[in-house]
Image 1: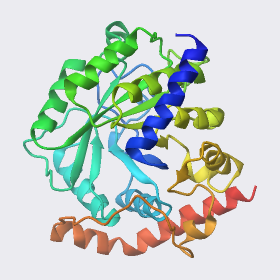
Image 2: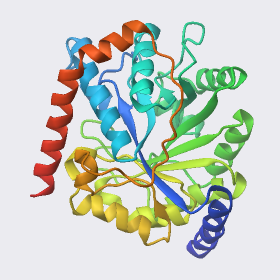
Image 3: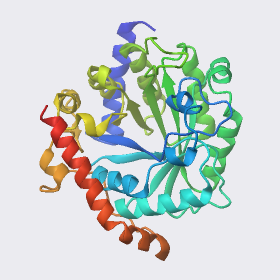
Image 4: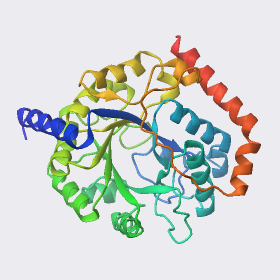
Length: 350
């Protein structure tokens, strides 16, 4: 497909997005539980793969509860939904149940989960909205080469189980790893086969010490082609697109191509700075209304309440044990929130 056709399709996709999803764009962020993955053969593009041999005690690579909960509180405050709760492979179901329960309670919102293959038999589904499978690439040869530790067949089986249990489902796809335009048809077939509710696209952020060190990523037009093609074929699907601080100017084009949500930012280091304001300006340039903020310091500190937000209070079930834990962490939570806010404000003034 040539550039003119991509732009023409993007215009159609933009109008189709407005028809089915309204004139709203939001910001989201994955909530990471830690930086260790116990896959014997981790994905070759992933930052965690570079840390595996450096981390002697995997438990020390996990975030403390007060850090996770403080971030959850701030995300709701500034209007960012959690894209999903995520981490490397290796979390016990009991741990996940407790974390999901506490995060959901703090946010008054059910959560998506993206932590590898899930043990549904022991997972408490009450506070889970959906499950995401880390497909990464639909090209069979690339998948076998880059993601040897997580066969696509296992991910597909998990997502079908999730559907059977009444959960929403989604996948993640990373562009810029060697896929071609021909692979788009494979993606469309997978979406239809699994009856997915959402998809998250990321552009590869080449990591040092991986096979992609020093390599370039997907171009903006190529990225638009994937997004707009999915939108034109699946008008009601939620499309999330991730970018990085060196590619902020592709946000406007991605919204034009059919994206509902923008994600994948180092939040606390650029909030309130020119980069955060650039994100807002890129979205505003498309005519979309942003239901989040990336610059309002008064909202971040809690001195002002965000007017427009996608958060709608939901009833969350929480055990006495986890409610007591949240209450016992109140002082640590307040200190962590204060630390995040102070650090963000300080960086915003540089």
